[in-house]
Length: 526
Image (tube, rainbow, N blue to C red; front, side):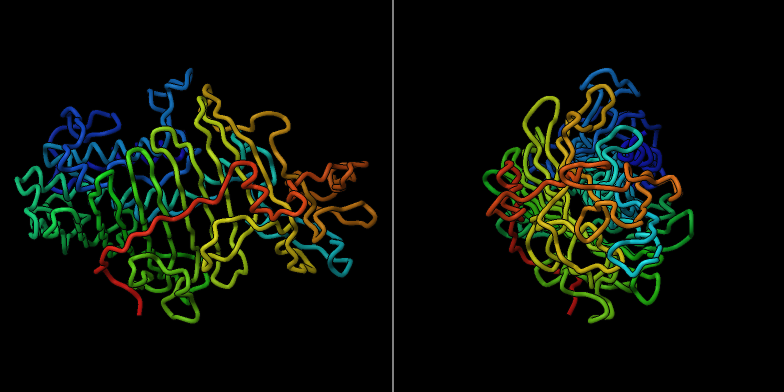
């Protein structure tokens, strides 16, 4: 079962327990309601007040949409559509049993595909002082195998895995606010009059929801009747650990003549083991700025793990601030920081995407996916992976590739290459797979030069079986042109062009983030 599908089934299984005003009746097992009522589209008043076509999801995430039937393209739904359907179901709810959301999703974290960035044993590395041996750490070797064991293209598998955390967290933030709209509607408090607020705090604190205690739940409509501000603050106690988590969400949404624009922020206390902070206590700070017009969606999501509980990582503009770093600031971000930027059509997912992330505040570069999705059926696209500017720099481009990011004798010299995979949706398996035998340019040797001619005694565990004794020239030698080993096959920058320009020449330009200047009143760092 796919990652998003598991999450959606989990969502449906616990919504009754976490309903804002308890539960009545059983769930229907579908993808939209917790009760037995029919799901209808949100009213025009709701679509003006809330970004109903907005979600954060990998364009390569597909979920089964028909009781496990996987015989046609109709059996699959994009993760994006699944999330927006969940949100619409809450917004159109007519009973309190429909006004539900999943606080546990605020605590979701990213994972990593097995084909990407494996740990790798080596001996007699040519860039070090021979003899030497060691292990390249996880996450530093990029796309190593063309596919996951399932047959999914590695670029798709890794992007889906990396985006698990931010996708579920933004879904939690959006569904929590949607539940406020639902609660106001069911209780006759919707919509608020222009220039007034609706306080739902008492309504949102049911006796039966033992895991959630609400401190604030208000909806405000400005005097112009076009800007909606939603404020939500609550404590969620994780039933598996009995740990309380302070969580707050703010949405500022402006209704425009063609769609809507605005900004989400969400903050949640959590823990992170093995990071850079002085303790495992961290605060998740997320922001999402967006602009929608018809089916066109422009968005940028930022997500950072800041040191300590109660850490405000958001700037005065309401966006998570990558320059507020640990240890310069004791409550700055010290662990993962990611930025997802996209310009796309929500009905087809065709468009430009960039996802980049940085494991620590002192890294000199971020790891970057640049992706173009075509308006085709079945879905096709091209994914590129490489290294770019650190997250403190507003640049979504891939600049090049490090073939030995953490190897001995690392010279920190970026090569003018990137990894590439052309992919196509397999409508039978529901997986995004390499288009053909020549669809991937990923092969290199983990050296500063990216190649190895076999002249030394260097050995590295290309097949990842944990055994160096079975490696031969056929598995370790990587040259161009190929001799006795493997063909060096990273994608080079075109003559006279940067790597960013070369990728753009393939029709994949770096997406641009929308701007939103509405007032922000939530917690912000100094």
